[in-house]
Length: 343
Ligand SMILES: Cc1cc2nc3c(=O)[nH]c(=O)nc-3n(C[C@H](O)[C@H](O)[C@H](O)COP(=O)(O)OP(=O)(O)OC[C@H]3O[C@@H](n4cnc5c(N)ncnc54)[C@H](O)[C@@H]3O)c2cc1C
Ligand code: FES
Picture 1: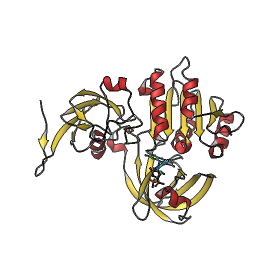
Picture 2: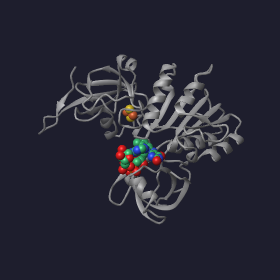
Picture 3: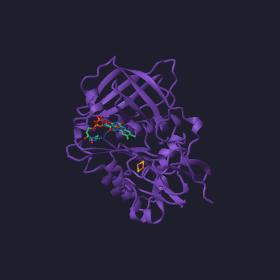
Picture 4: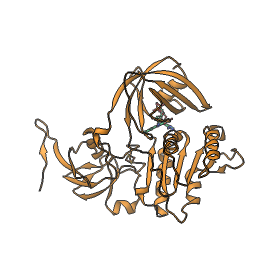
């Protein structure tokens, strides 16, 4: 049965979007992606880059039809596409649609807020990475889970997403790791004119990356550059929960000088015997035990052992896309791959 109806006074037809397995029914529009419709309705579906490259929003189309007015994106393999998988951030409905989605958290758990914040401290973590410590108004509670990100908003309204690198319990304080981008508006401002004491704003939290369970199959963490930030928060959450899972943590950078979490990860690995740290540098100039090359290649060379792991990855979209396709080729079920892609 067709449930479509027209928006009064427009030529836009509303379609019915059914999210399985919960059978949550929403309205969607042909001029919006299915992800935009779900997020707009307050349903925090799993997603990351919103640009079709990370595969985090992949879903199984059960009934209905979609179109890709801005291109289908690179986040799915040909085999996945042929099997009826779609990317919710790229797919627009052309009929009522039923899709099986990976994660739906009840909307009630998430309160998205826009708050002023003060830059408390700027810390040079490496020549190209800045630790940005923000202070929120103490009277304004700001809830988030490890793995989520916020939009940082400059006085002129320019906003960019940055992952939260510490645990929510750090009262009224947020920590971000910001990489310098040549000519970048927000990262450039943070590396240049913004000084401690400056008042900015944040909005969030966003993102559906959640801490893994403290027990279960082995874990593999793959951080590319400042992709370390959300994975650090997940690792801190695991430590707090007393995790027992064998965990390999790959941290990859282009230049060895940007291996900014090397010291911290070595300290964690020394403290927790089930954590194995693998530094990876493209320039071959890293510490003696560092692997040379790209981080996703190091992971794919090592995988998979006798037990299929869960993989958590964060960093630049091309790295996430390459890792995802490599893991898929090696038979990792995509239900065990969680990614945060940086646009
Ligand atoms: C979910 C999410 C989480 C993110 N978390 C982080 C984080 O924790 N730390 C972090 O440093 N960044 C993170 N990013 C990236 C961040 O949001 C910005 O895109 C980045 O800081 C560049 O913004 P800018 O204003 O400095 O540059 P812009 O003014 O947006 O860009 C300037 C130029 O650089 C190019 N460019 C933009 N981004 C990059 C990039 N990453 N690498 C190379 N070239 C680029 C643009 O195409 C443009 O030509 C995240 C992105 C997403 C979507
Ligand atoms: S491919 Fe859709 S969120 Fe990344």
